[in-house]
Image (cartoon, rainbow, N blue to C red; front, side):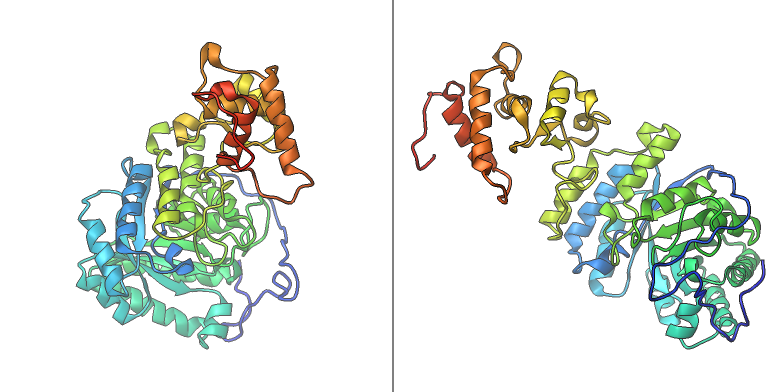
Length: 449
């Protein structure tokens, strides 16, 4: 593995990254074999990368989300760390409030730039480890910083040495690794590890796919290949898998699959944010990583997914951020079907169109949203759910009132273009179609309720 060009000239890999076109995915050599991490964990970045994509979070909301992170996967230690800024008084107050919780996990780790003033923020608050940003691609070293690899490497090593001397174990974040000269990055990682060894302190290296350009495909070439990146840092840079993390962005829809792929090829740490909120298109969702961990290991007790709906409520009600109703796991309608054929199957047996018992695991029981495509089975299921009908009181699709309600719904949608019927509108239609469900029976007037 040879270095690309001289240290003085930027390696921009134009055959892979033609700026005016879609990035290419070259393949080379034999595919790597998976070698899963022995003890995978999650490194949360909700209060670091997540806050870079939104207005500042209120301290009270941060503490509430930190509690929910602990519930989601911190009790077992699956969510091992959570990154925090220290730059503002509000940042530091949030850190102090979260430290007061006394949780073993997630462990609060400050995030800083590789600069002396930032390091002082860490030592002033008494932390003994810190995430430290290192730009490693020539896009950053040459084009942004106006430096070259050799000069930048000396600065990085000096900053790492300063941290170690101050009693701080560095967690080095290799920014833009999927556009970087990998031999240069391997040399840098080796030198950093040697410095840490001299101080008898651990070194963690994070591979940051800053623009979401990584790919999970076996046999893909560096620098985009996540399998090759992970194996190269373990086998050639000598970074043990338990000290290796991956941080992916979702620009090309691959944050989750790339992060799980890093797990499968030996990187123990998977970085993500709650609901995937992060810079630009976001990151791997922490709750989805929890789900994948259980799927891969069978360790159901490692996470509590019932925290997910509450997390979504905090994002919407306290942070003012929108969670799409159909957003996987967290959306309010993830267990809601509007298709009549699906409703028919669910009414007969929930497993027909449900991947799992979302009512038990997510507090999201199966429900029906009524449209002109919901059919008689969908209307019957909605009525039974909405009015709590059980046993002999339940209605089925053969009930004449169900047919009357279904006809009224089709008429209400007309030629299309309107939003979904609200619960109040559906109750109004139900009163007209099945007045016996109401006590006392009544038929509304033309002006509704």
